[in-house]
Amino acid sequence: MVMMLFGLVVFLGIHVVGSLRGLRARLIASVGEGSYKAFFSLLAVSGLLLTAYGFALWRAAGPAVIWHPPVALRHLTLLLMLLASIAAVASKVPSHIKAWLKHPLLVAVKVWALAHLLANGDIAGMVLFGSILGWAVYDRISVKRRGEPLPVAPGTYAGDALAVGGGLVVYAALAYLFHPYVIGVPVL
Image 1 (cartoon, rainbow, N blue to C red):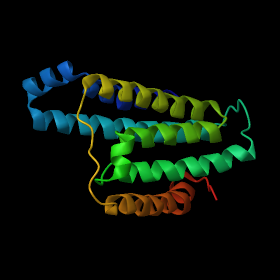
Image 2: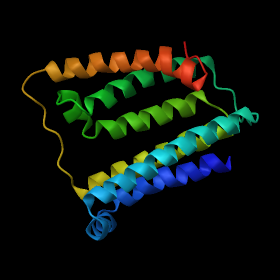
Image 3: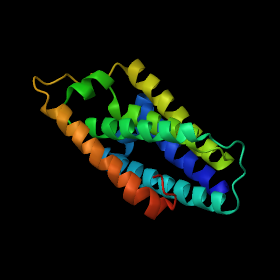
Image 4: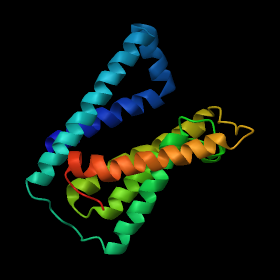
């Protein structure tokens, strides 16, 4: 439990620091952009690994179940994960989907976290996915307040086809490979 919580503090904390543009600018000015990015990346990856390992340990110790999600939520989770996968790919491809979602990677993270909250009724899952959902909501509000430029839709729909096709590939890889073999929980 402690390892996962520490990992979340590191991972989410470094992302909150990145959202505070004044603090971020002062850090970059004092250490340089390359050093800032390297340190940010090191802390983010370290926090992510600590979170994942701590989550696995917490659940292996015996999950404290608050509620048992009904089967219908499992189906909703599968649908939401398809949407999250498409949004994640759309964040990297110029498309109408990217322009419509405005910040598709944050949408993907929010949908991913919500889907996993719906599918997991144990305390470890609620803390993990609830924390990430809370951060993603905070970051979306932060991005809106900063007034960063929004993506513009391209003239063709090729990017949309690429985002949907790539999202389907990512979804299949997560469902059939990553989740059962890395996480140890088959979803289908």
